[in-house]
Image 1 (cartoon, helix red, strand yellow):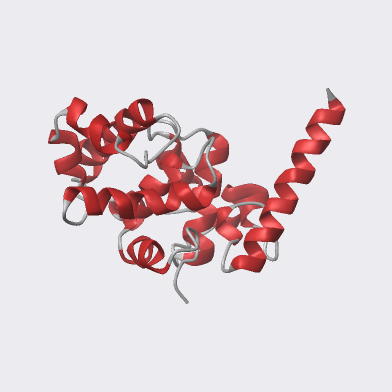
Image 2 (cartoon, helix red, strand yellow; image 1 turned 90 degrees about the horizontal axis):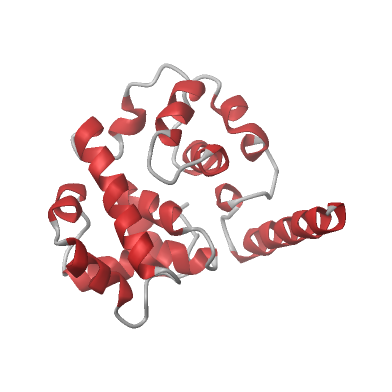
Length: 190
């Protein structure tokens, strides 16, 4: 079964076949609906006229990249900062993994090591790294020893906490319910 994060077959097909698109979707997954975040890599490929390439994004004129992100409809609520963040992530991929996203996990010995590599990416704190690790394990077959433990609660079987658990419209609704409950709980705690 293919990915179902953007809820758009064309965009999900790209996420399914291109790990860079999936990683960029994860980068963009903040302060906008997750469907938009994960559809935006597809829109970016349309604007570029071809598939994504980390080296090309790094070499792209930064202001021109911002313009691609800002053109209506903008790829993110904050197109400038997110275009530059995507460029930073691609720069890290070029510097450490020859521009290949799958090299992030190709030779890891365990889930903890993969988590540390993800946390080293610009904009990937503990939570985002754990969510992406869970997504890789649950839906992409990237399952180094101890990956569930390294992903924390996001790695649990049968949970509906994050994008890692979205496989259809029903699971998307369940993840949203979980997030709303957590938000309500944190509001009450304040």
